[in-house]
Image (tube, rainbow, N blue to C red):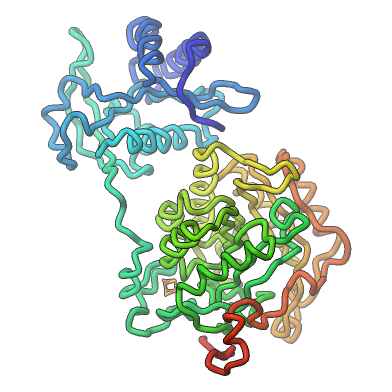
Length: 502
Ligand code: SF4
């Protein structure tokens, strides 16, 4: 779905959309009391289109699925509202006539429209976005609240000479959110959804195993990501030590739980990115950087300034705070995110985080929105990507049904995004010793069940794996390759350490 300024040739379609919305709302509990020819009018829509203030959401086959107006016109009565943001009138943008086609409800169109409006308002230099919703229109009020709008209360507004109505006045503060990725936030770390509050600045380790110093396990070309990421040249992977999740079956347990790696200064991260580019990497692939995300804005800015020109891939477990993902907007080109479980029970038993499904869905929705806002997926002539999103799911033995529910949740959160369904589960020593379902590989039957379900849902871009389910080539050796400055490699001043951070 794309949100874009309306064109004059869209006007008949926009009028048809509003007509359908008005007819659908008439008499419903969420009736906004709009009437075609009165509010909105054909002339009003045309004028707002010509002024660049009318926007549409375009779905599959260029179908218009939503629209809104964004301008600086504060309706009569707005002056009585005790707005939270003290902004001069020229720093206020107002959303009017936000509508979703009746047959496109439940697809996240409303949220996309609101997010797009906030984005446009920011670009216009506004400090706040304001709106009014008929007080009885509970779905609209809930949507705005969930998008971060403050609810200023109910006021009587005169919508026309002979029509007053109770309306809920709402406002979105566009000031940059608290800087979660500010390095100062390490004094009480809440970088990941665990929000364990460790004072990493003072050397305390969080549940992820990380303290204040950056620790890396490997930096090398990697050939086994999805084809648009690895291509023929390879992806420039940088493996960060530690992990907020510590899944019991982790195939990278040496670094996730063992915290294997070398401490390096942040400047070294910049050098590594440039070295990987020099080696021909198609992109910089930051593998599980969640707990070091506070270093990324500066490191990426420095790397870009020093000539980094390839895309940045953020390769994550999916267990991310939406606020962190928002602060990475514009820095990350390709989101390579897991969606591991649909079941809270599995999240709890296997990764110690019962809120995994809800957290991953919210983070995924934000990632997908960012790609849309940036203009959608983009590729080089050879088919490798420069912008996009891939949602990965590792099928676990004995849990194919949950995998199908995961696909349902991906569809609900982000629609028809590219998905990568993997069968490479390899039982680690602990899982082999424990016995049970997770001590074996995924069967062909289980894998087929999940792939069939992805097909049934209608995902149009899907990656899958062929051959044996267990293949150790997917797991590179964690030997600190590429982490040290070559001249220092044998000096003994920097050592690879394996430590138990649990
Ligand atoms: S990143 Fe680590 S220290 Fe910070 S909240 Fe998450 S687990 Fe805790």
